[in-house]
Length: 381
Image (tube, helix red, strand yellow):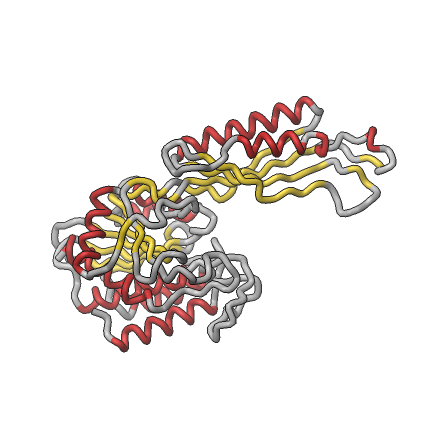
């Protein structure tokens, strides 16, 4: 169990991490802080620069047994924080507004407990993943040869989830987080003087029809195997001037589905619709992909292990709030391991993720840490 001193020191670490947010792909200093903290906790091995700035600490019993990975995220968000807490972000325009500072702290808490009582069999891997917020980090990590040397049999993660009761865990087998993909569409035509719009080849002519057809591809609804949702998130046409008929437009559309292959189908459909309308109106269309998240699927056996651990700790859990439409870059860890994501509630009225007034709830640190440790002891002794 974590002592009161442990909890106080972990809270201090969490708040220090909160002050120094780094966005996806730029987590170099955060990784250094994590490595320094881990080095004091006696792991058998520390791996760095995994899939970018990723870090992994390995506690190896030296005996046969499964490998169990616990994942946290290194990156913050490009959002100006407005929480007003004394440990406010010291980097303008960036903030830990998704709780990754807290998730890292859970793993550092687990490291403290493992340093005192190592696993009796197998090995434990504390994985600090980069670039979660843009959906590329997990794939980069599992593709790295360094990761192949510590390939886990089990993988677990906890994400705080505002709106759920404090200390309650949302969990279920199957879909837990939707797949999503950002499709950037660029339309190119020809400008003209605003007094002579008939001389232009403007994308404005197709935008009403195009936006309507893109939205119609996925209308949301019940989160089952057929769930599809398309959301127009950005539209920019021409220049901010009164003298030019615009010749270019940029559209961002987020494609979301409960299955990875459906995302590809949505992308193909969106590109086909856009290309057809563009060609009919003598426009050129270009496409680019961003923020490509795989669906996160909870393995039934991994869920059972997590639930057994929570039963031992008298932690309340169930299917409130899950699955979620929101995406999470954890799914790739479940491609070759039995994986489960747990959604831990900080309270129904806690500020939402990605909001400027959000801050991680420090009272979750011992709860999450002890869930992780109980899973370790149940699987490895």
